[in-house]
Length: 101
Length: 500
Image (cartoon, rainbow over all chains, first blue to last red):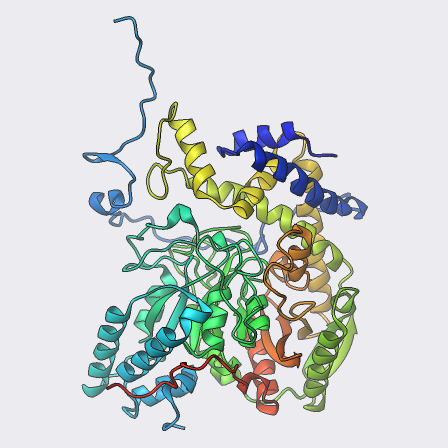
């Protein structure tokens, strides 16, 4: 399956990733090359083989007691925020302001 | 040995000398800080150091010894930490512009455990951005130089940690290994590196790349030192649900020097086309050393080995595309400046400006492999082949106790040599990714030289049987001296003296 510029643009949009036109061209070429290599897997017979999602699949995950413990204090949680407003993270306006006033 | 320069002492020698009051932690830390100052203009293994905090901590350890108490099994041991492991007091950047100013509000579990064992953390080491790479050339900040050759990469992604240990800037370091990122730089830099079993060491506080593959592990200059470090790092952690409850054995007690009767499998597929003949020779000679010591060498086959690399890149990129979605420029990390049309645009532009080219490639590739219409053909297929790879290992481990193979098909390559071709770069990991897919433990130890560059022997064990890997590696190191060779570094390198 070849990788098209449309594929890369669409997927980058899913991934929330801005790409410049030059980056898009580069990724079409590189990903096409890598995907071609990955298609060597088509040669492996996998009918009836269960997917292995992680290597310890089958061993039960250890559980801890369901008891409350202190979370990160507000000031520490906000210390790395690029922008804040009081106790909140601040982002650009989501609701467009109308010009009809 | 207690008179040796402090930067030449190993972990066990140094810790035990500090515990006995024969050497001072403060002197040891100062000697290593001096060596970093003398060498790191050339090597660039570190992204940041914390001299004041390290010296203060060392003085506390010396005080503990003066009081007659035991500071722990790593008393006064300076440690370098890969900069994708969160630690308070310094930024944790993952060598990404995106996290250049990120200061974690907490310590990773492995950092807590090092502190509790008396270790002193010197600073944070360079890596490929978000641990994505095999040469440390993908660091957003600067490359790291291999101590064995100024024109050579140190391997990756934990290149800074491996270079620092090889150069005597620290006797020990932490790395992470998702597809070979501890073992490859250990091989390229001539040090001992151990990737523990998936679940052996808590990943709480490690910046996630591919969650079904990532493990934290130690670098040192001997298997015995790695054993001391692993005993501190390993064990369950109720903040990481994948940290396994299996008991942690006494790894140092396993180092008997005896490999009589140990069955060592040699997988034919790991010596296939692409492995340099000089590398194959060095690895086979190392296996001969273990055979002469009484190990039984058994030819074995892992037939799905050729598929490990494509499976790895599908699984790792798919998981990375999900893990890296958290870097949105909202709560921490880089935020795009200038006008944006709304939150989605802010996120896409912050990621577009803050993340480097290899990271973007992997996010796009992983998202592509998971997208509707492609999922079964790529990600689903990869997970099925992954099971076949794990079953290969399970089958041979019914007949053998350990596998021996090259760590990498070649010695360290030159800067820029593989940058233009992603597949050429990925081939550096052809001998290491299968181990991560199957969740196994494996070490790389130096076993020979090609034109002055180290070659790595990879020892692969059964799940949670790090003890057998360490026993064989230590037995080999008792009979050989490759791990004792040190690189000749530029003049001006401090020899590591006492505190003034």
